[in-house]
Image (tube, rainbow, N blue to C red; front, side):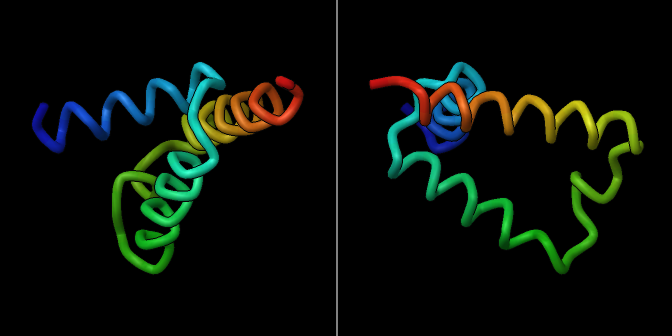
Length: 67
C-alpha cells in the first residue's frame, strides 16, 4: 500500500470514528504542521471549514464514547 492510500485509510477511519489513538495523534500532528502555512484548510470557504470541523468533532466524540 502506498503512502497516499494509507493516509486516505487513516482519514477515513478518523471520520468513521474507528481511528486508533495513534492514528488520531498522527492526523492532529499532520494538520498542526499546516497551521502557519497557506494550505488546503486556509483555502476552504467558511462553510467548508465549519463542515470539516463538525465532522472531525463528531468523529472524535464517537471515538471517545466507544468502550
